[in-house]
Amino acid sequence: MPTATEKFIPGEFDFAVDERDWGAVQMLLAEIEHDLSERRRALLHRLAVWQVAVSVLRRAETRLMVLREPSRRDLDYHRAILSYLLGVGRLLLLELKKHAKIDPSAIGVSFEDVSAIVDDLAYSERERYGDMKQEFRDRLLEDVFGG
Amino acid sequence: MLLQEILEARYDLETCEEGQKAGALSRLNALLDDAIEGKPYSREQLVEALGDRFREFRKAKRREESRRQH
Image (cartoon, rainbow over all chains, first blue to last red; front, side):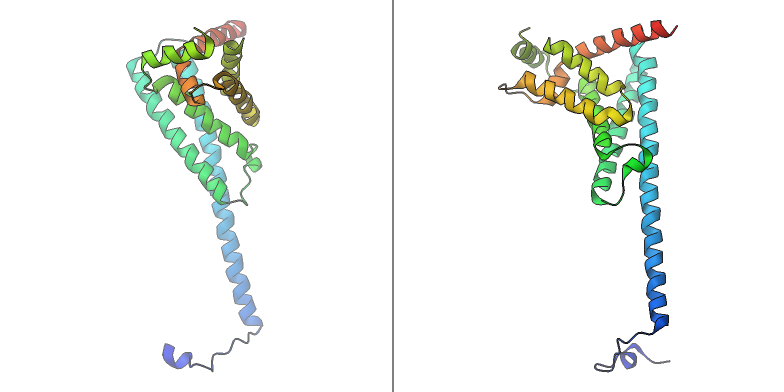
């Protein structure tokens, strides 16, 4: 069994390839392509699941927090789930930006729409759980709308 | 009236189809920008300040829609 040193003597390493080598490269490329395709599919799958989760959250909000007064428990769950989905959405956006080949329109939504859903969630979080002082709020609304 | 338009646009963003979200967000942000132009506030601050009013607005809209469905 030759050692690595014996195998790669300077000047003797031959880059010449025969068809078997190309076959190996092609197999490797196919493997990489398969892996990338799996990752694309996995990202789109996560995006689709996230979209469904956001619409379920919105439905629950309407039922439990809009058409009736939310309990403390409702608010605690809502805040945690909203914050979680917002974080996941931001991560998905970062991943979509990183992988230009992954087109979310394959699941019926554009990158801009995904980004807008994330902004919508962020606005919801500010509206419900922001920590703005009442005095500042009153002054802002007075300045902007004149009372 | 700008306040009413902002509340409508905010509700539209929350309730529109997913494929229309980007357009709805642009409309809302344009109205928010109009409202805070020349003032030392951000869009997010204005949205937060309007939180109570938006909740009341949304409640009225949802109840109206719910009544219409039944």
